[in-house]
Image (cartoon, rainbow, N blue to C red; front, side):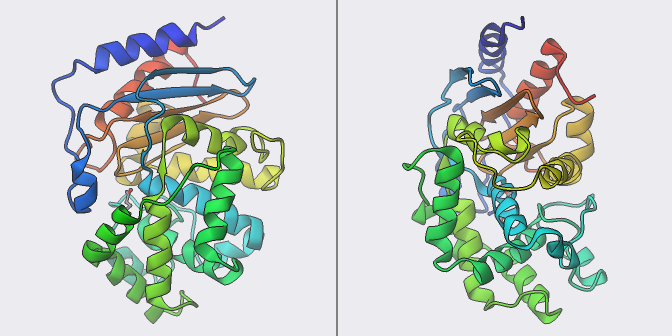
Length: 304
Ligand SMILES: NC(=O)CC[C@H](N)C(=O)O
Protein backbone atom coordinates (compact mmCIF):
# COMPACT_ATOMS: atom_id res chain seq x y z
CA UNK A 1 0.00 0.00 0.00
CA UNK A 2 1.13 3.50 -0.76
CA UNK A 3 2.42 5.27 2.33
CA UNK A 4 0.71 8.61 1.63
CA UNK A 5 1.70 10.15 4.95
CA UNK A 6 5.46 9.67 4.49
CA UNK A 7 5.32 10.81 0.87
CA UNK A 8 3.49 14.00 1.82
CA UNK A 9 5.82 14.64 4.78
CA UNK A 10 8.87 14.24 2.55
CA UNK A 11 7.50 16.54 -0.14
CA UNK A 12 6.64 19.14 2.49
CA UNK A 13 10.04 18.95 4.14
CA UNK A 14 11.84 19.13 0.82
CA UNK A 15 9.92 22.11 -0.59
CA UNK A 16 9.72 24.19 2.57
CA UNK A 17 13.46 24.83 2.13
CA UNK A 18 13.22 25.94 -1.52
CA UNK A 19 14.62 29.42 -1.93
CA UNK A 20 12.61 30.31 -5.03
CA UNK A 21 9.03 30.49 -3.81
CA UNK A 22 7.40 32.74 -6.43
CA UNK A 23 5.64 36.03 -5.80
CA UNK A 24 2.54 36.72 -3.68
CA UNK A 25 -0.30 38.30 -5.71
CA UNK A 26 -0.46 42.05 -5.21
CA UNK A 27 -3.13 43.18 -7.70
CA UNK A 28 -5.68 42.42 -4.98
CA UNK A 29 -3.94 44.39 -2.21
CA UNK A 30 -5.43 42.35 0.64
CA UNK A 31 -3.86 39.14 -0.74
CA UNK A 32 -0.40 40.70 -0.62
CA UNK A 33 -0.53 40.45 3.20
CA UNK A 34 -0.07 36.67 2.96
CA UNK A 35 3.12 35.12 4.35
CA UNK A 36 5.21 33.70 1.50
CA UNK A 37 6.45 30.92 3.82
CA UNK A 38 2.99 29.40 4.37
CA UNK A 39 2.78 25.89 3.03
CA UNK A 40 0.22 23.14 3.53
CA UNK A 41 -0.74 19.85 1.89
CA UNK A 42 -3.85 17.77 2.51
CA UNK A 43 -4.94 14.48 0.99
CA UNK A 44 -8.48 13.19 1.28
CA UNK A 45 -8.77 9.59 0.16
CA UNK A 46 -12.10 8.42 -1.24
CA UNK A 47 -12.16 5.72 1.47
CA UNK A 48 -12.36 8.46 4.12
CA UNK A 49 -8.74 8.40 5.31
CA UNK A 50 -6.85 11.71 5.39
CA UNK A 51 -3.18 12.74 5.41
CA UNK A 52 -1.66 16.17 5.90
CA UNK A 53 1.51 18.17 6.33
CA UNK A 54 2.25 21.80 7.27
CA UNK A 55 -0.51 24.41 7.42
CA UNK A 56 -3.27 22.22 6.05
CA UNK A 57 -5.88 23.61 8.44
CA UNK A 58 -5.15 27.33 7.92
CA UNK A 59 -7.86 29.14 5.89
CA UNK A 60 -6.69 31.21 2.91
CA UNK A 61 -8.40 33.01 0.01
CA UNK A 62 -9.61 30.36 -2.44
CA UNK A 63 -10.08 32.89 -5.28
CA UNK A 64 -10.50 31.12 -8.66
CA UNK A 65 -10.89 27.70 -7.06
CA UNK A 66 -14.40 28.94 -6.24
CA UNK A 67 -15.18 28.92 -9.98
CA UNK A 68 -15.46 25.13 -9.96
CA UNK A 69 -17.90 25.19 -7.04
CA UNK A 70 -19.98 27.91 -8.72
CA UNK A 71 -19.95 25.93 -11.98
CA UNK A 72 -21.25 22.82 -10.25
CA UNK A 73 -24.13 24.79 -8.72
CA UNK A 74 -24.99 26.43 -12.08
CA UNK A 75 -25.02 22.97 -13.72
CA UNK A 76 -27.30 21.69 -10.96
CA UNK A 77 -29.76 24.44 -11.97
CA UNK A 78 -29.46 24.54 -15.75
CA UNK A 79 -27.76 21.30 -16.78
CA UNK A 80 -26.54 21.51 -20.41
CA UNK A 81 -28.27 24.82 -21.11
CA UNK A 82 -25.28 26.67 -19.66
CA UNK A 83 -23.16 25.67 -22.67
CA UNK A 84 -25.17 28.06 -24.85
CA UNK A 85 -23.57 30.92 -22.93
CA UNK A 86 -20.06 29.63 -22.21
CA UNK A 87 -17.80 27.30 -24.22
CA UNK A 88 -15.57 24.43 -23.05
CA UNK A 89 -12.32 25.13 -24.92
CA UNK A 90 -8.98 26.00 -23.31
CA UNK A 91 -8.19 29.66 -23.84
CA UNK A 92 -4.40 29.49 -24.00
CA UNK A 93 -4.50 32.93 -22.46
CA UNK A 94 -4.25 34.45 -18.96
CA UNK A 95 -7.28 34.21 -16.66
CA UNK A 96 -8.25 37.84 -17.14
CA UNK A 97 -7.65 38.09 -20.89
CA UNK A 98 -10.23 40.18 -22.75
CA UNK A 99 -9.62 40.32 -26.51
CA UNK A 100 -10.82 36.75 -27.24
CA UNK A 101 -14.10 37.64 -25.56
CA UNK A 102 -14.66 40.46 -28.00
CA UNK A 103 -13.58 38.40 -31.02
CA UNK A 104 -15.90 35.57 -30.03
CA UNK A 105 -18.94 37.77 -29.54
CA UNK A 106 -19.16 37.65 -25.77
CA UNK A 107 -19.10 33.84 -25.42
CA UNK A 108 -16.26 33.07 -22.97
CA UNK A 109 -13.93 30.23 -23.93
CA UNK A 110 -14.65 28.30 -20.72
CA UNK A 111 -16.19 28.73 -17.25
CA UNK A 112 -12.84 28.83 -15.42
CA UNK A 113 -11.45 32.04 -16.90
CA UNK A 114 -12.80 35.23 -15.35
CA UNK A 115 -15.27 36.11 -18.13
CA UNK A 116 -16.72 32.59 -18.05
CA UNK A 117 -16.98 32.68 -14.28
CA UNK A 118 -18.87 35.99 -14.53
CA UNK A 119 -21.45 34.31 -16.78
CA UNK A 120 -21.75 31.49 -14.23
CA UNK A 121 -22.17 34.09 -11.45
CA UNK A 122 -24.96 35.65 -13.52
CA UNK A 123 -26.70 32.26 -13.81
CA UNK A 124 -26.47 31.77 -10.05
CA UNK A 125 -27.85 35.25 -9.38
CA UNK A 126 -30.87 34.36 -11.51
CA UNK A 127 -31.58 31.12 -9.64
CA UNK A 128 -30.59 31.76 -6.02
CA UNK A 129 -33.08 33.56 -3.79
CA UNK A 130 -30.44 35.06 -1.51
CA UNK A 131 -27.43 34.59 -3.79
CA UNK A 132 -24.51 35.20 -1.40
CA UNK A 133 -26.12 33.40 1.53
CA UNK A 134 -27.33 30.46 -0.55
CA UNK A 135 -24.02 29.97 -2.35
CA UNK A 136 -22.13 30.01 0.95
CA UNK A 137 -24.55 27.44 2.32
CA UNK A 138 -23.93 25.23 -0.70
CA UNK A 139 -20.16 25.39 -0.11
CA UNK A 140 -20.67 24.67 3.61
CA UNK A 141 -22.89 21.70 2.75
CA UNK A 142 -20.56 20.04 0.25
CA UNK A 143 -17.56 20.58 2.53
CA UNK A 144 -19.60 19.50 5.55
CA UNK A 145 -18.32 22.51 7.47
CA UNK A 146 -20.45 25.38 8.78
CA UNK A 147 -17.46 27.54 9.73
CA UNK A 148 -16.57 28.45 6.11
CA UNK A 149 -17.13 32.14 5.37
CA UNK A 150 -16.58 35.05 3.02
CA UNK A 151 -13.65 37.34 3.71
CA UNK A 152 -15.32 40.71 3.26
CA UNK A 153 -11.98 42.56 3.40
CA UNK A 154 -10.71 40.57 0.41
CA UNK A 155 -13.99 41.10 -1.48
CA UNK A 156 -13.85 44.86 -0.80
CA UNK A 157 -10.20 44.97 -1.82
CA UNK A 158 -10.95 43.37 -5.19
CA UNK A 159 -13.99 45.60 -5.66
CA UNK A 160 -11.68 48.61 -5.40
CA UNK A 161 -9.05 47.34 -7.85
CA UNK A 162 -10.78 44.78 -10.10
CA UNK A 163 -10.71 46.98 -13.20
CA UNK A 164 -10.25 44.11 -15.67
CA UNK A 165 -13.21 42.26 -14.21
CA UNK A 166 -15.33 45.41 -14.57
CA UNK A 167 -14.24 45.56 -18.21
CA UNK A 168 -15.08 41.86 -18.77
CA UNK A 169 -18.49 42.21 -17.16
CA UNK A 170 -19.35 45.28 -19.22
CA UNK A 171 -18.22 43.56 -22.41
CA UNK A 172 -20.38 40.53 -21.57
CA UNK A 173 -23.31 42.82 -20.88
CA UNK A 174 -22.83 44.60 -24.22
CA UNK A 175 -23.04 41.20 -25.93
CA UNK A 176 -26.19 40.45 -23.91
CA UNK A 177 -24.52 37.57 -22.12
CA UNK A 178 -25.35 38.92 -18.64
CA UNK A 179 -28.97 39.12 -17.63
CA UNK A 180 -28.46 40.71 -14.22
CA UNK A 181 -27.04 44.08 -13.34
CA UNK A 182 -23.26 44.34 -13.96
CA UNK A 183 -22.58 45.57 -10.41
CA UNK A 184 -24.62 42.76 -8.85
CA UNK A 185 -22.77 40.12 -10.89
CA UNK A 186 -19.39 41.60 -9.91
CA UNK A 187 -20.36 41.88 -6.24
CA UNK A 188 -21.36 38.19 -6.21
CA UNK A 189 -18.21 37.16 -8.10
CA UNK A 190 -15.86 39.10 -5.79
CA UNK A 191 -17.53 37.46 -2.80
CA UNK A 192 -17.35 33.92 -4.17
CA UNK A 193 -13.61 34.45 -4.83
CA UNK A 194 -13.10 35.86 -1.32
CA UNK A 195 -14.19 32.68 0.49
CA UNK A 196 -11.56 31.53 2.98
CA UNK A 197 -10.94 27.79 3.17
CA UNK A 198 -8.11 25.56 4.32
CA UNK A 199 -6.53 22.76 2.27
CA UNK A 200 -8.53 20.31 4.36
CA UNK A 201 -11.86 22.11 3.74
CA UNK A 202 -11.12 22.39 0.01
CA UNK A 203 -10.30 18.72 -0.37
CA UNK A 204 -13.60 17.85 1.30
CA UNK A 205 -15.57 20.29 -0.89
CA UNK A 206 -14.05 18.72 -4.02
CA UNK A 207 -14.90 15.19 -2.88
CA UNK A 208 -18.03 15.24 -5.05
CA UNK A 209 -15.98 15.64 -8.23
CA UNK A 210 -13.93 12.54 -7.36
CA UNK A 211 -17.02 10.65 -6.25
CA UNK A 212 -19.34 10.83 -9.30
CA UNK A 213 -21.22 13.87 -8.02
CA UNK A 214 -21.82 12.70 -4.43
CA UNK A 215 -20.43 14.80 -1.57
CA UNK A 216 -18.83 13.58 1.66
CA UNK A 217 -22.32 13.10 3.09
CA UNK A 218 -23.32 10.89 0.15
CA UNK A 219 -25.77 13.43 -1.30
CA UNK A 220 -25.90 13.54 -5.12
CA UNK A 221 -25.41 17.21 -6.11
CA UNK A 222 -24.77 16.80 -9.84
CA UNK A 223 -25.29 13.89 -12.25
CA UNK A 224 -22.38 11.49 -12.84
CA UNK A 225 -21.95 12.69 -16.43
CA UNK A 226 -21.63 16.31 -15.26
CA UNK A 227 -18.95 15.37 -12.72
CA UNK A 228 -17.05 13.85 -15.65
CA UNK A 229 -17.44 17.06 -17.64
CA UNK A 230 -16.33 19.32 -14.79
CA UNK A 231 -13.20 17.18 -14.36
CA UNK A 232 -12.54 17.45 -18.10
CA UNK A 233 -12.84 21.23 -17.91
CA UNK A 234 -10.50 21.34 -14.91
CA UNK A 235 -7.92 19.30 -16.82
CA UNK A 236 -8.08 21.41 -19.97
CA UNK A 237 -8.76 24.86 -18.48
CA UNK A 238 -8.01 24.81 -14.73
CA UNK A 239 -4.61 26.48 -15.00
CA UNK A 240 -5.31 28.97 -17.80
CA UNK A 241 -2.34 29.24 -20.14
CA UNK A 242 -0.51 26.69 -18.04
CA UNK A 243 -3.16 23.94 -18.29
CA UNK A 244 -0.97 21.98 -20.70
CA UNK A 245 2.02 22.25 -18.39
CA UNK A 246 -0.03 21.09 -15.38
CA UNK A 247 -1.40 18.08 -17.29
CA UNK A 248 2.11 17.33 -18.53
CA UNK A 249 3.82 17.56 -15.16
CA UNK A 250 1.06 16.49 -12.74
CA UNK A 251 -1.49 14.62 -14.83
CA UNK A 252 -4.61 15.35 -12.78
CA UNK A 253 -7.67 17.57 -13.24
CA UNK A 254 -7.35 20.52 -10.88
CA UNK A 255 -7.88 24.19 -10.21
CA UNK A 256 -5.66 26.96 -8.93
CA UNK A 257 -6.36 30.34 -7.33
CA UNK A 258 -4.24 33.48 -6.96
CA UNK A 259 -4.41 33.02 -3.18
CA UNK A 260 -1.86 30.23 -3.78
CA UNK A 261 -4.20 27.26 -3.45
CA UNK A 262 -4.47 24.28 -5.79
CA UNK A 263 -6.92 21.37 -5.62
CA UNK A 264 -6.44 18.33 -7.84
CA UNK A 265 -8.06 14.92 -7.90
CA UNK A 266 -7.95 11.41 -9.22
CA UNK A 267 -11.55 10.24 -9.76
CA UNK A 268 -12.57 7.40 -7.44
CA UNK A 269 -9.24 7.64 -5.57
CA UNK A 270 -8.33 10.91 -3.83
CA UNK A 271 -8.44 14.70 -3.70
CA UNK A 272 -5.22 16.55 -2.90
CA UNK A 273 -4.89 20.24 -2.07
CA UNK A 274 -1.89 22.48 -1.52
CA UNK A 275 -1.40 26.05 -0.36
CA UNK A 276 1.73 28.09 -0.98
CA UNK A 277 1.02 31.80 -1.70
CA UNK A 278 4.04 32.41 -3.97
CA UNK A 279 2.88 32.35 -7.61
CA UNK A 280 4.75 31.71 -10.86
CA UNK A 281 4.48 34.01 -13.88
CA UNK A 282 1.18 32.42 -14.96
CA UNK A 283 -0.49 33.07 -11.59
CA UNK A 284 -0.33 29.48 -10.32
CA UNK A 285 1.28 28.45 -7.03
CA UNK A 286 4.93 27.65 -7.70
CA UNK A 287 5.53 25.25 -4.80
CA UNK A 288 2.02 23.82 -5.11
CA UNK A 289 2.71 22.69 -8.66
CA UNK A 290 6.07 21.25 -7.64
CA UNK A 291 4.48 19.40 -4.73
CA UNK A 292 1.81 17.86 -6.93
CA UNK A 293 4.33 16.87 -9.58
CA UNK A 294 6.43 15.12 -6.93
CA UNK A 295 3.30 13.47 -5.51
CA UNK A 296 2.03 11.95 -8.76
CA UNK A 297 5.55 10.95 -9.78
CA UNK A 298 6.35 9.24 -6.49
CA UNK A 299 2.97 7.52 -6.07
CA UNK A 300 2.60 6.80 -9.82
CA UNK A 301 -1.03 7.88 -9.41
CA UNK A 302 -2.38 10.10 -12.18
CA UNK A 303 -5.09 9.85 -14.82
CA UNK A 304 -2.44 8.85 -17.35
N1 LIG B 1 -6.84 33.37 -10.89
C1 LIG B 1 -7.57 33.84 -9.90
O1 LIG B 1 -7.60 33.28 -8.81
C2 LIG B 1 -8.29 35.13 -10.20
C3 LIG B 1 -9.40 35.44 -9.24
C4 LIG B 1 -9.55 36.88 -8.93
N2 LIG B 1 -10.64 37.10 -8.05
C5 LIG B 1 -9.74 37.69 -10.20
O2 LIG B 1 -10.83 37.76 -10.69
O3 LIG B 1 -8.84 38.27 -10.74
